[in-house]
Length: 65
Figure 1 (cartoon, rainbow, N blue to C red):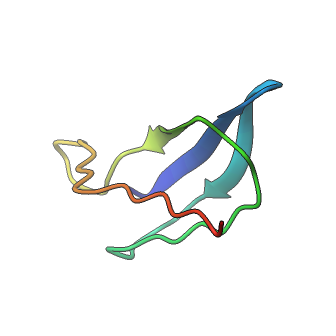
Figure 2 (figure 1 turned 180 degrees about the horizontal axis):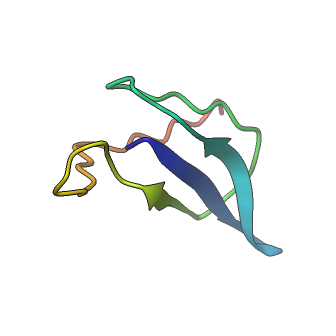
């Protein structure tokens, strides 16, 4: 995915915790200090491929607690 936003659902609703643009890496790390029950990706630019699809193999959310 070249461009995406990471959003977290908190008691106040959905909040954007990160925006990534122009990504070419296989792994993207997004450190965020937020208490949330759900996390989602909002993909705005899937790939540089003519097929233009996003492939997400794994999402890992880790708590510091």
